[in-house]
Length: 253
Image 1 (tube, one colour):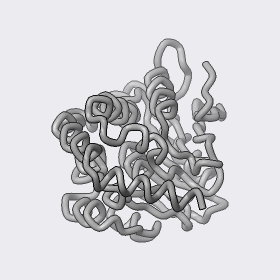
Image 2: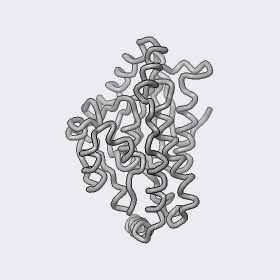
Image 3: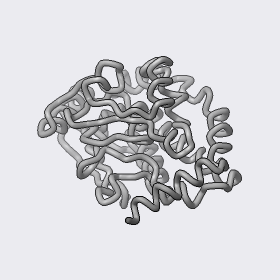
Image 4: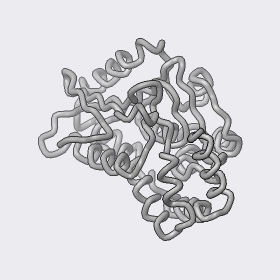
C-alpha cells in the first residue's frame, strides 16, 4: 500500500520507521495526511503484518507544524464542514493510540499545534535537542481540540492550561521535564535512539505488549464529542477567519 504523505522504512526485528514526507510544508497536516495516517495505523500488526513497533518522525527541519493553514482557510466559517473534519482529525490521532503496536515518536524539530498533539498520542516520545513544542491554535482563534482532551492525561491539567492558553513555545529540555517527551538526544542521534527503544519493545511478547497498550489507553476517547462541538464553533468566529487571512497574507509576502 502506497502513501504520499509518509515514507516507510522496514528495519530488522519488526521495527517500522514512518517518516512524514512533506518537508516543503514543514510536514503540515492536510486532509490527505489525516486519511493516510488513519489507514496506516489501522493496518499495523494485523492481517499478517509483521510490524512489532513503530518509530514516527518527520523529514527536514520539522516533526510537524500542525494543521495546514490553507485547509483552515477552506474550512473557516462553515461549521457543517468543520464537524466531520474535526472527527477525521481526532480519528487520526486516536488511530495512533489504538494502533495494535506501540508507536515511538522521534520529534526531530519543530512540533507546533497538531505536531505536539501527535506527540501526545504516541506511546513513547523522544526529542532532539533542537525540538520545540507549542499549542499555537490560540493565535489563530482556535484551541487544540485533541490536545485539551489528551493533555491532562499526559502532562497534567496545569501544564495543558499553560500551553493551550498562552501559545508559548517550549524547548526540548522543558518538554522532558513536564512529560511531553521521555528522553532528549543530540539531533544526530535521535533516530538511532528511537529505533533502539522500538527494538527493545519488539523483543518482548507481542501479545503482552498489545494487551498492555490497549489496557493503558482504554477510555481515551472520553471528552472528544464535546471538544468537537467547542472547536467547531471557534472555526466560525470572525477572529479565526481574520487570523487565518492575516497569516496567509504574511506568508505570501
